[in-house]
Image (cartoon, rainbow over all chains, first blue to last red; front, side, top):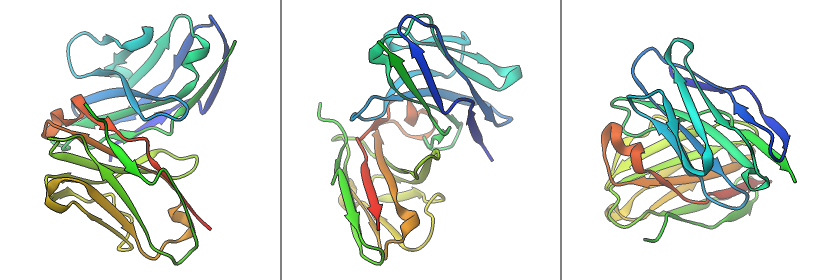
Length: 114
Length: 117
């Protein structure tokens, strides 16, 4: 069965620090990978996605993620975080013929100190 | 374009009672998904509707949970009778595309926080 593991449950950074959130998945076939973000009091929003092609994908608000197939990883990065990036981040995976069903990781809560 | 709307935003009920959660998807979205997040754990898939039909209900925890999608529009998720372990946040999502492309443009609601005491 597919599963997703996020390495950090809570990350605390100061503004301007660099961010890397780890995500590993367990599935042997072709996968589609996602990072979602939930800001306080808001709905889940798509940050970025990987389906095929360039393994380095760029999303909104300066975020990027790199798909490393050999490591089954899809880590999220941002060179310089802002206070407004405080939110919970979710890695998710789906595969062909899953009907759009997402398998999520446990989420990482990011707190950015001003 | 209006987003996915969920009602209520919060619900506190006693063990043994019944609760009905509602999800209004974006108009024209045939695909509707329910997910649940129990405190401290991952968001888990519950089921998937395509129009009024249940496409995949493999994530439904037990027969105390009943989901419907009348006329392929809004959906309800009823928990009867509620148990303590049902507490969590219930998310709804909708999308226009089908199959593996469905997640290309899946929009989530804000969720319903259910607390069973």
